[in-house]
Amino acid sequence: MDINEMNRKAITIMKYWDPFAIGSESYGQEIGNVITQLQVLDDPSDLAKTIQMNYEYSFGKWIPLEQCVDISYKLIALKFKAKHII
Image (cartoon, rainbow, N blue to C red; front, side):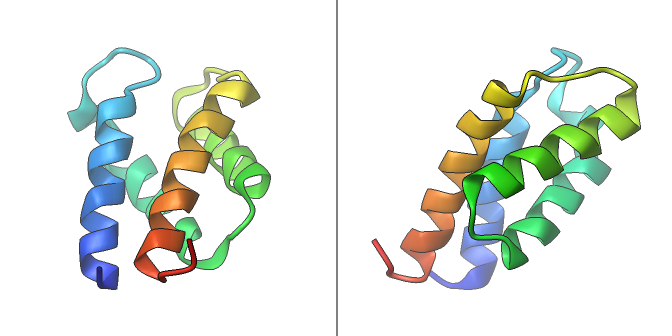
């Protein structure tokens, strides 16, 4: 899997997540920011905190860290699969 395919799959995962139940089309900027951070972060906890802060900043609503950790593990697993680390 190349980086572009990984990014497409990560975007699909993020769109499916919809933490505020407002429709996946509402998260374009936030998803882009998360995908950018996915390129540089390898720790699920760090990525989860980034996700939480990013969405809270944009929407003014707090997401429990546990929900962010769940999605971050999916994204990190995808990244490691793309790198053939797993």
